[in-house]
Image (cartoon, rainbow, N blue to C red; front, side, top):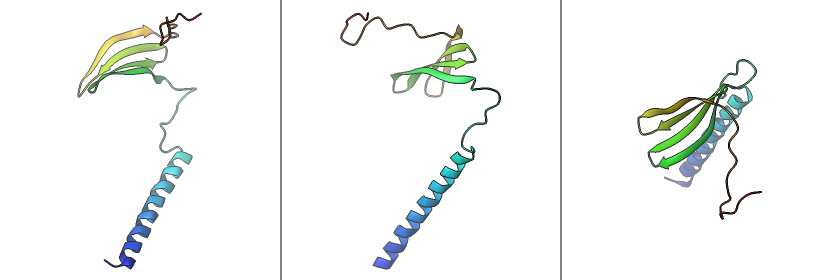
Length: 102
């Protein structure tokens, strides 16, 4: 391939990437990429998630004012505890170096 062929390829690649970026910006601008909200606010949220190992995660999900503890794995989901009354997180007992907080 000559220099013209490489230049045409690079310009075409830049043009296609610019089109993808423009479409993404328009989708965000007009709300196409976001879920529609009905009512005053969101009802579902992930409160906290922790990775147990490369295949499993423990997730605390909040729906309205009720929390559910779910174990997510490779192809499996398991409800550990459901119907937990939502509340504030308990204060931590100490810091990383083991000292008590005031």
